[in-house]
Image 1 (spheres, one colour):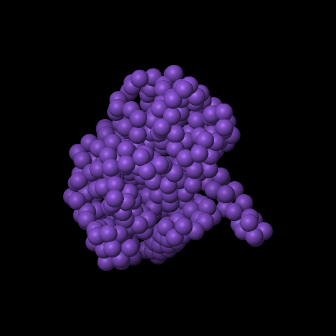
Image 2 (cartoon, helix red, strand yellow; image 1 turned 30 degrees about the vertical axis):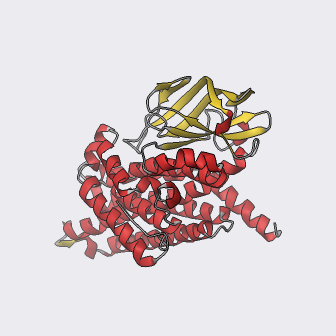
Image 3 (cartoon, helix red, strand yellow; image 1 turned 45 degrees about the vertical axis):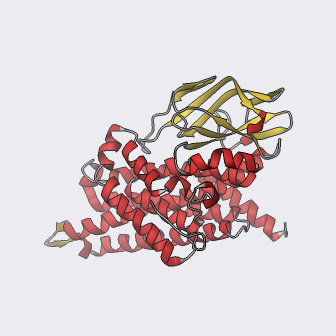
Length: 389
């Protein structure tokens, strides 16, 4: 298990480096040799997840008082980059869990934190975040899932879409409409397709992002204790949108990881493959591609780091998180495409991992708010700051 002292809390650069190096070795040893097979079979990586639990990765940002590691966001994004470079699907298992835990950490009562965070920190109970619906993605005003107060309970009805970890999660942070407006709740369930008025109504097939389930979840008269309402009634959307800033920083970090993996694969192949009597890396056309790829990867990493630093400092970072997510995800898509071109015909086969990077990269362009939405977030944020708001 990764360990740190309360004083260090992941903020010391040497401590951070050691932790990230530990995760890198884990990826090299336990992920890289089996990622292609798990990808082909679209199989949940149960043994790898157990290893992640052993390292404490489900409690990375949860305070030590609740059994977590209490590490900072810079350490977290470093861990995410390493996992994504090995197999991007692993980062989704951690990301949605971390967002659910963050909602509780920032807006839960002391009793709620004591009740949920310790088991989340160990990964005994994994989390999911559930905001989107079939008719409410970027337009959150269309949220129709309804929670009706009935004494000491709420009765929940509706369907949620694009729920990562939905089937295996024990804690689902969910947005539903109440009389006061959109409100955040924690739904407690046992892992599985059906649980007391909750059912996985659809398994979503995907281009990439294999091995981790993405599902629709249907709620039919599911009763939630009123004590599971998180934060203030009617303020759930603002609370969850704040949590999504961490999700966007995570998306940026995983995009950096995928782009880095594609770059590394290209650098290795450029030295192995020969044409016209010399390695293709000695051809100027390939060198130009490699230079542009490496520059974009490093710029994406710095933007991601800047967003994480601002978020960790408690500063407004809607613009910075949007910029990091926008640039890093577009970088992953471009670098993965260039990597395939450098590999030529073999890049289109499943014998090399480049085709996986090419399939995984589009998720980051779409996930946690499409890049079109990110541009609007960035522009509106810039204008608000210019007005002094």
